[in-house]
Length: 80
Image (cartoon, rainbow, N blue to C red; front, top):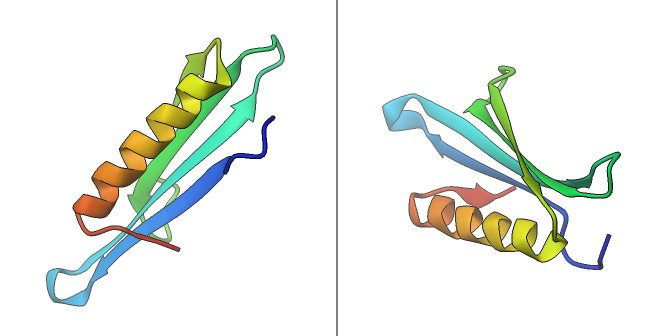
C-alpha cells in the first residue's frame, strides 16, 4: 500500500436535529491482489451499514475515497 491516506472517519453532529452520524472510509488490500474501499455509515453508537467496492488499481480506490470525502464535507461532515 502506498503512503497515501488509507482511512478516514467523518462525523456530523447537530443536537438541534437529534443528528449524530458517522461515515468511515478505508482502503484495504484483498487476498487476491486487488484493492478494496470499505464504506461504513450510520448513527454514532450503532453498527450501521457497510459496502465494499473492489478495484484493480489502488489509485482508483483513492480517487473514490477523495470524491466521497469531499461530498460528505460539503454536506456538513467533519474529519474526526
